[in-house]
Length: 440
Image 1 (cartoon, helix red, strand yellow):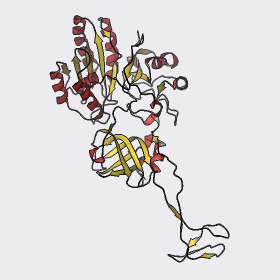
Image 2: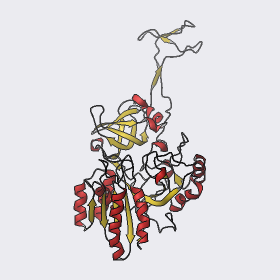
Image 3: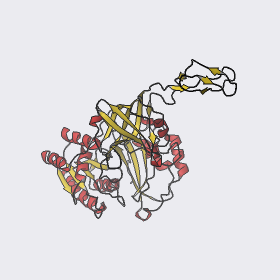
Image 4: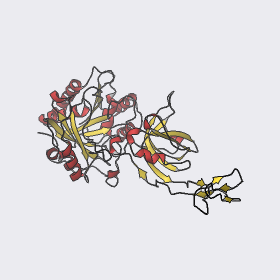
């Protein structure tokens, strides 16, 4: 049976992966066997009703019919108990699908849920068509994520995440993770893990900031790589439990190429090409903006202050440069037009920048001054005058080049593929599971 669930948390408490961690132990206790690591599937990060990371979970298990039937009640009880049902925006949903691989239509639905905006009605029609079961609490929006988590089998590129959880009495307090140990872990495992430390600021990135039960999370290329964190990262508080998830983190699974700017839609993550329409400008808060255009239209792009040095690249663009931009689309409002919030940019072609300057004095070498249109130039120091000469045109070299530019890790979304992962992409699922992939 495949069990998908979502939308259990709120901004003030809860965590869908923590419910999954509790269920891992309970389902094993009734004799069910996990046929894969729990899947943590990040959905479209631009939907307006998401809480934090917009992550849904799927548990894929097998066992005798009686145990599978018992699992249904265990899952529903745990989801109801662990969800913040008093929060207006929390609408949990659980989907149960018996059998092996999910149908092709469900896999397509999952891809759309990661890249677009899908409806609960569409999810319910698929659930009915393929004989699955859905249980919703309150409005039941989590049914969408539950079905999408089942449909995303992570058969292509994927990564792993070890999540450790805090004891209830420590939640809401500062996380007691030893910074020096995280830096050592980053140094020793940089070839197999990613996004532990921000290289520009030295900031530790593995600890969340909210009141949720996660102590820290480590992402990497294999289950073995992330499990190494248990023995290497020092903590000054007791870890309640830990689990390794297989996930679409760091894969760019959300980004969808579109053929023209006219196809760019609000709330979707896109990849689109165009020419820079005008010089970038800096707005309030240090955010940098520019616009691109093609034969079908024009759209604004933004590099926000948290992207750090990435903004320096954007400031170097000039009108006519050809670029490919990657990011989520913010809808238009009364204050701003529809805008692509940049996650990365690929510079495809740079135009020559022409700079005109006054000629230099043949005697002292100082820049001369114009005496008026078509009247020549003079040197105030040497009193030399030159007539019949024009300004000198030069094309200085650009400080950017034709390549991919990515902001520092502290500005990445969960799904953004970091620079270190280029060349590490996978083309299939793992051969098996390691022993002891969750805490005893």
